Length: 175
Length: 175
DNA sequence: TATTGTTATACTCTATAACTATA
DNA sequence: TATAGTTATAGAGTATAACAATA
Image (cartoon, rainbow over all chains, first blue to last red; front, side, top):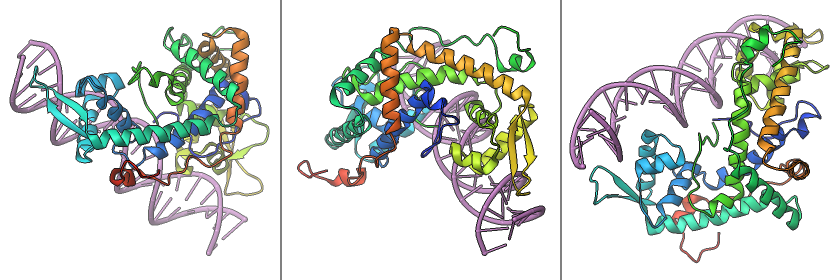
């Protein structure tokens, strides 16, 4: 888990409450909390939802294809599909062209559940945005989409100066 | 770890790329990746940074107070302060009023490092926002702050209809 | 008795590596 | 030989419970 910060957490100082990282984290966790609640009982949680979403597409995907797309380890994907299959939400079908691979396909039950989950997730989204009037909601989403589109464009901030070096650096040193 | 989704991940469908949850996650992870790099070598990572931030305040905090404020378990806080103390960034001082509690106070070294880390985190912030022109950056941050301020106002989306119930529900049922 | 802090233990999640069956 | 999938093992991170010192 990354950046777990359960429940309400107070800002270390008034200034921090205006930091991008802090506010982004607060809003993201508020959404994640709602979304986690929606997918809580689904096998695999939010990851199960992602797999189910892909499994409901027309073109079938292999397990390794799913793993690569969703950034999940191949070995984890096995357990994930196992659980979803046991719940009757997806099926494994041998790929005709390559008998090594399984295609993961949503069952009718899985597709019905997916539609309901998506509707509930839309509610969670609306809940998070409810603090803004409609036209500002649209502005926020539009700006967020543009940020997301360029999020992976450049390399992250250079780590030329590590903490280890910082610990021995003097105040005047450039970092 | 919550919502781990390493590296670049493709959206399950074109529509999803416009979902709030998806875009929020992409931008948050982009920032988290930069921020994690900044605090990578700090004992305790980003949590160590949070503790250090509180420890640098004027009014000293007890370990249990820190744990409660930051949503960290008491037992984890012990290890965290141990590591920060070993690195010479904070000190434990017996509280005069209550000899059971330790006050966690940043050392001069800790305060210097904190100032540098905060400067680097500001760079990470600027990096994430770089896709937008200045006046839209200000708009985004303002809207985000208003969302964050109301993030914990109401209860999360009702989970009156759990997945377990969904699995047995018929298409017409209200959820 | 309740609380602060510490320690030890167990549990969950994930990653690594070895194995099979196909290609 | 290389790849898809499976399984087993080990590791990190976290939570649970018991303990000592103090209130």
